[in-house]
Length: 330
Image (cartoon, rainbow, N blue to C red):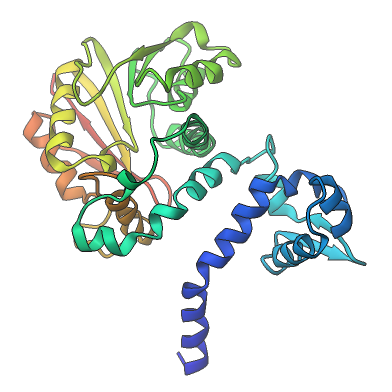
């Protein structure tokens, strides 16, 4: 790689925050729904309630630079990515998860402090607002729709009849599993503030009568018993090894003999050299949690072995996500 290539790649890293702020600002302003039809910068500024035409023009031109918006004869319009992902209610709407990431802007600005102290910086911020919670839970739902389909393409869950989704939030995985398996019942366990959002999502489906939402704290409450399928999706990265070992033990106790545990997370290689997403996401856990991290397959295997599960197996789901599957012996 020659010097110019090195400098270009370095510039992409150092200016990444500028690109993300362009997107966050446009999304929070509500610009993308306006650009489903062609508009001038003045028309967009007027539609936003008298914003600065100069400022709006600069922001729109930056969206052109990011290839999110096209510009023809001074008029702006959404490109394919913006129409599909950045307009609320679009086919692959990602607005909630992007807003969730935008809420992390200030805390990521204190990354150096978190690395120096080994402690989260979220304690410096006010308590999470209901808007932030909804953005996070609905963002998880938007992502989970695609992951749930991928999971069902890779796994045959038709033999299972009673599912528990621990920390299941909006219930996206449980809903998808129920839709694919008419003989299955499911329970979503999550905190009281989260459950109304999950019930909203379930109400628009045909499986609401087979889905139960139960309030509970996974770190302190029992998971009950009688389940033959338990999902722990994107949970272990929020906790330290000791808590994750305890969660796996409680899941073992809640499963019937022959029952299946599915751990879905950003599992990284045992030498911690990839995938890139998981390595970077570990810093997100450093910033926001007391003990969270991304974990290796060997670490997760150790937890399931210690709990009494049979030999587990690893399954790649997406470029970022892997599954660890382990059965309780019969």
